[in-house]
Image (cartoon, rainbow, N blue to C red; front, side, top):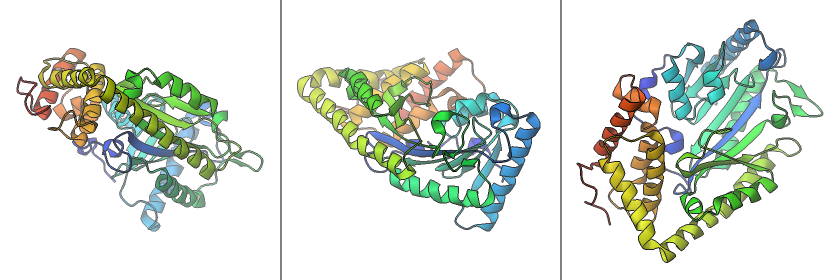
Length: 365
């Protein structure tokens, strides 16, 4: 099916839809499976001919499922990542539909995306398949049920690399076993402000949960977004690993809400000033970087949830989080921009969508 990435640009994507349980703090829930074809070497040892054949076989089988099995998503688009321009690859990374590894990789590689952006399959990333289901808000159980159904359907068409002793065989030893990575993305600004976030994360590492930044492994925590996920996949079932992550989320929500209550009670004026300054800068700046924008939008998002700002809604802020990223900004503007011009365009975009008109005080507390 033909697919035009420009069609996606005006929307926010599933992970920033701002809906679902606990969506004031839980941005999204994601379950990802790593799978490999039994008849081919892992990607690190595959020849270019192997990669091309893996991609061809997987594309054929996914398209067959799409046409013949009503349980499989019918509204899918197949994107040849290897043929994309750099800006389009970056656009898909910003949208959480592909990883940086796939974007920056070599040779034959692709991604299959459903129109709702809940389901995607990366082909020839670190493993032959990385299957992903993502929901807005806290919805791990539904995400697991959905990806389990899709994985079963794929396994009817594909012979996966499997060991009776170890389970699913993967390129990285940390994924051997179930191959499942269950994660939630949380917005934790109050824990950052009160300097409790490192202490909380150290306690998570002791129970084998990993903490990563906005774009996964190796990325920085921008905009106070953090991904919490299981570290090991061997020795426990997929359901047990899903429950392990799901069980810790209410604890983290409690910490963040307690920190927000503390800030409101003990330093409300300081907090209100921080939020108002962030909102004012976003509404009036003439040039602004992507990093500063994320930082300020994080404060505004928290301010909306605490009732300190009432003339803008969470979905608008969520949309700005992604639309002000470099590739999205250029796709929406319809032209390539250097860093300086992007900063000017970003500030203009923010002013237009926050209706600043050069003033920062109207309409909020």
